[in-house]
Image (tube, rainbow, N blue to C red; front, top):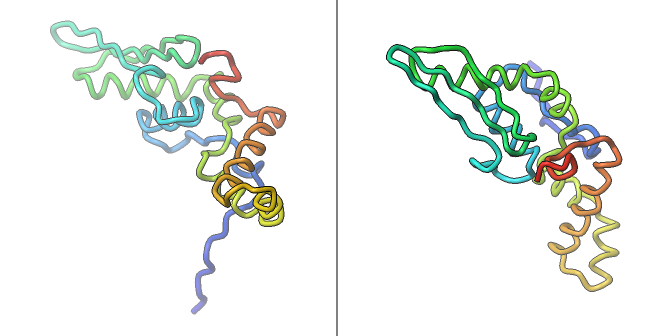
Amino acid sequence: MSKKRPRTESSYVEDHIGLNLAGVAPKSAVQQFFDRYTGRRADNTAFYFMNKRNQQSVIATLITPALGDRHFSGQQCSDKKTAEQSAATVFVEDVEVLEIAACLPPPLATIRRIADGYHSRKQKLVAKGLSPKEAVEQLVLEIYETLRDKGCRTALWDGHL
């Protein structure tokens, strides 16, 4: 019987660029996309659903202020939940959305973990008078700023915030 090795994550920021939306529930994929694209927990200022109801059906449209105010309309469905899932599916299958998703920066928690591993750089900043926490935050900023040059995209860098 072989023992399972503990999973180790790469300490290279490049290995964490991008968001794979395949296999993720459509509405969850929309939330994850905008969390990463806006760099914060996305709310209705980043995206929201507008539902048009008639007697037998609902059509949902996903409106995305944080993505140039693009609209993604789903299929006619029998209820609001299914209609919103349909609009979210249109979003996650969109060519531009998939291109941006492939270029999203890693989550800040991942960048912090990577920065925390830069022991010698962190020690140099601490020697200059920063606290260990301030040193990590300084390294996070430095790493984050390099991501734009690596081709990453955010709502701010794309001019949508």
